[in-house]
Every structure is written in C-alpha cells, then in structure tokens.
Length: 377
Ligand SMILES: *[C@@H]1O[C@H](CO)[C@@H](O)[C@H](O)[C@H]1NC(C)=O
Ligand SMILES: *[C@@H]1O[C@H](CO)[C@@H](O)[C@H](O)[C@H]1NC(C)=O
Ligand SMILES: *[C@@H]1O[C@H](CO)[C@@H](O)[C@H](O)[C@H]1NC(C)=O
Ligand SMILES: *[C@@H]1O[C@H](CO)[C@@H](O)[C@H](O)[C@H]1NC(C)=O
Image (cartoon, rainbow, N blue to C red; front, side, top):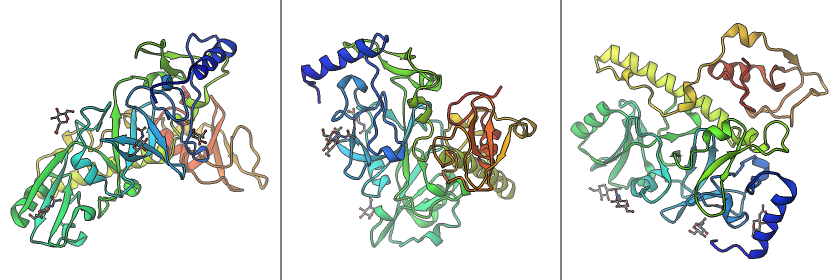
C-alpha cells in the first residue's frame, strides 16, 4: 500500500501535466459499487485501486466482493453505509450485525474519527442480570431498547438515551451500567419517530475534523494534497470543469443520504415534542434546553417559506416521462422512480427536477438545491 510502482507515479504525473493546469494531481472519484452512486473521494480512498496520494492517512477503504465498502477500525471491518463529505460525517454498520458490541470495545484514539456526537446525551448500556427482558418490558421506558445480540439466556443488555429511564432500570430492575457512550445511532425508521425495539443492527455515526474539506466540497471544489511530500491540503477548482464537478454533485446524494437527513430532522422534532409532552405530564426537568437529541449540523440551516416554494415551476409528467435535465428516472430525494402523471418541481437556478412533494419538504428545511447545493436566493 505504501509503495507505488514508479511507473504508475510517472503515468499519474504525465497525466496531470497533459490534461489539467492544476498544480497537483486531482484524483478521480472511485466507487466499490458504481450502480449505487457511492462516491469515494478525498480524504477517503481505496489503496488497492487508487494512488496513495488520493487519500489521507487513516481513511483507507476496501471494497467487498458484493460491492460493499469497508472501513477498518481496530483492524476489523465496518460496512460504510453513507459518507457526507460536506458535513464530514459517515455512517457505518457492523457486518456481524452487532454494532453495540463494536462500540463497547472501539477505541478511536488512534484513528482520525470521533463519534461527532459529543454534545448529545449519551447512550447508556446496561446489563440486567437475573431477568429476561423483552421489548414489551422496555416499553414503559422511553428511548430504551434491548440489545439482543449482546444478551444471554439469563441476562439482557439494554441501551437508553434517557437519564430517568437509566435510573429506574438501575433501581427497579437492578441493571448495571456497563458504559456510557456519546455516540449517535441511525436507523431506517427514524423518520417515523420510531425507536427500534432492538438496537443490534443500527448504523453508527462517525465524524472527522482533519482534513477539513467540508466547505471545499460544499463550494464545488476538490480537496487534495497541496504537494507530494506532506499532509497539507487545499481546495482546487479544476479549470476545465464546466459547472460543478461530478464528485460534488454526488457527495450529498450518497446512499441513503438525503432521506436519512430528512428522517433525522423528523426524529429530532418528534423526540423534542415528546420530551415536551412528557415534561408537562410528569414534571421532569426540562430537557428541551439541550439543542437537539442528535447532532446534525446540516439540519440547522433555514429553509424557504411556502410562497417561495410555490413560486417554483411545476411540471406534470407526461406518459412519455420525458423532461429536461434529469440524469435518470429516479428522484434523488425520495429515491423512487418518476411515474407518468406525477407532479415534479424544478429549482429555477439550476433546473434540477424532483418530485414536488419531496422537494417541497426539503426546501422547507434547506434553502439549497439538494443536488448542486445552489441557493435559489
Ligand atoms: C480494484 O482493483 C482490484 C485488484 O487490483 C481489481 O480486481 C478490481 O477490478 C478493481 N476495481 C475497480 C472498480 O476498478
Ligand atoms: C481491513 O482488514 C482486512 C482483514 O481484516 C484486510 O483484508 C484489509 O486489507 C484491510 N483493509 C485496509 C484498508 O487496511
Ligand atoms: C485508547 O488507546 C490509547 C492508545 O492508543 C490509550 O492511551 C487509551 O487509554 C485508550 N482508551 C481507552 C478508553 O481504552
Ligand atoms: C452481564 O452480566 C452477566 C452476569 O452478571 C454476565 O455473565 C455477562 O457476561 C454480562 N454481559 C455482558 C455483555 O457484559
């Protein structure tokens, strides 16, 4: 991995001199599974397929046989589900379907990653011995789940986000606190405000702060090393590109990116409204003062008002489903296909099309085009 054959280096050098005026090599993006648009770009790279200088140390990925992308932490692979380059966050899951087990032993000290959830309430893991606890037993405890993959026949491991639940479980059910971790989990049904009954196979959020490339990607640039000898990075705007580079376009749409962000907004909203209701009912201390249960810098952006959204052009899709400027037949927000007679809306500034329902929802929370991040104002 460390030694690149001289001939490859030479080729790469020749190529940059030949095709681009940029002073450094701009690595092309890579994908373990091109059909999924799962773009791998700086600081991540796949050493097996890309030059050593295409990625930052510690951001090495491997491709799996079935098109999965893996990140090794503590020399064991985690499956990469999504990377948000602009927010410098990624989601990983455990190939063995027990992310809490990995979490309890994970030491991120020697990696570039953190949980990116330091300001959030921790998940407390509890070992409840002498009792077999089921999902139903945990239902009186809000934001509490069983971790089936860590439980045995005579003990159950639970995890909770709520201090009150933790205290009650310790008092009444004699559970022992195993660990508190300021991590954020993501799961599919999040947007329904639904806490999974079993936390075994959820995704874990990881964040990074170095190298700091989020703003560069957001502005349509390509982050890269400045030279061949050290770790300084800079933002490059390839001179030959017309408009946004492909990489920036896909950075946000990666995997379940947008739906997940929308889900996260919904869940945060749901949790805070539930917390409010609970506080009123039970006189709990107000936990509303914590900004959000989940750490999502991207949800703090302010969206557009309804009249502005309504002023954007709508199109009813004809039987032929033909309309300008869509790369394929799938709405990148809700990931469902465009069907005849459906209503689409486009963003005038960049002429990108989406299902009207999906883009309206998005624009209410974000004032930018989800594909190119251009702001309509
Ligand atoms: C990556 O490299 C491996 C081995 O060098 C090769 O088998 C594989 O086809 C490459 N993948 C892509 C997508 O180029
Ligand atoms: C990750 O670990 C696996 C084995 O556990 C190994 O085959 C693979 O090469 C490692 N990948 C990287 C990028 O270190
Ligand atoms: C994590 O690993 C570092 C060394 O790499 C060590 O100093 C630190 O104590 C470890 N932390 C925990 C919680 O084990
Ligand atoms: C939970 O406690 C039981 C008994 O006290 C123990 O046997 C078991 O290993 C513990 N489980 C975990 C995951 O620590």
